[in-house]
Image 1 (spheres, rainbow, N blue to C red):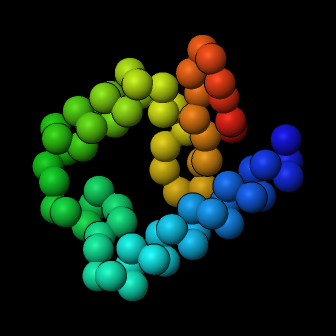
Image 2 (cartoon, rainbow, N blue to C red; image 1 turned 90 degrees about the vertical axis):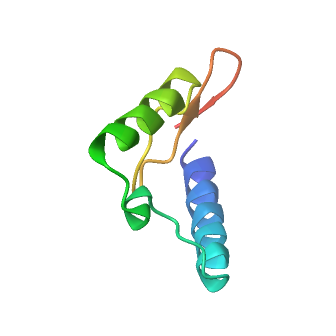
Length: 68
């Protein structure tokens, strides 16, 4: 499981750097969203099984499959 976490961290970092190299924003705060909108986004992610959200909290959990 620890190996999977390390692989996912490296993957997400490379993906983030790729989007940054394209000039894309990679954080909700980069979009100057108001707090209400951010709360709605987070709630939608949680409702759809994405529960370990945020910097260095790699994780995805659904009934059928999971990583953390």
